[in-house]
Image 1 (tube, one colour):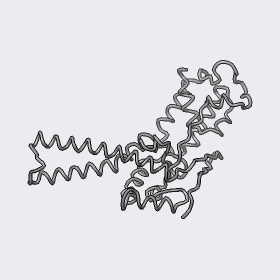
Image 2 (cartoon, rainbow, N blue to C red):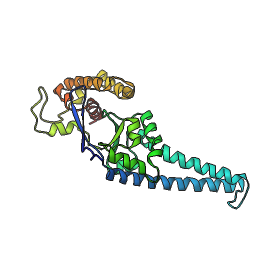
Image 3 (cartoon, helix red, strand yellow):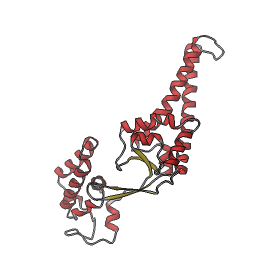
Image 4 (cartoon, rainbow, N blue to C red):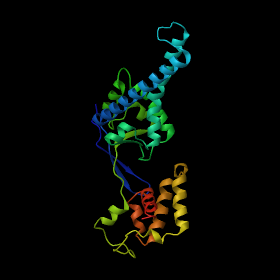
Length: 259
């Protein structure tokens, strides 16, 4: 069996290298335990609700021997499948690769190139989860993670994804506070990021990119160019966009409009 690699290094087309710490079996097991507990609680609440509705609206009794019992069991089965499968897909799309358990432990699902997972990849990895779960509580999945050098279960292998420790985003404030070389034309007093220098057209361009970024094939390259243009307009060094993801810079700049 291979020992899991501790880090994943991704070299982007912009020659910026990102490092992610690969999540091991222990942290993933803890996240799965939290998620499983939440799923069971949600299933219990929903199933009790279904039983109460059936009892009061249709005068259903557990002691009855008619076809109503078969229908009720079928509904319980559908609820179970929906939670086991849909729970992860819903939260991974809502929280960009995180379920409540992963969010609590500090993990995130990403694609192998470091970009966020899409709906199709989330569906694939969670459909295969049914196989990973066999014969009992991720038996197959744990074996696959032990064998794979990056601790990827079968669902990750099928979808081209992996689980890493979430890393804090780099902000403009942290760059400003760092003992870096002075940037030309940028005052060292007051607000070091003068967003008031941006025109309405600059802001509209940045906002339009954020709205459409999921559908853009050249997302990273376009984000870098926009970030460089915004930094230049503010009087900062556009080269900052070569060391910080363009989307991070754009989001941080837009967040300072009212500041």
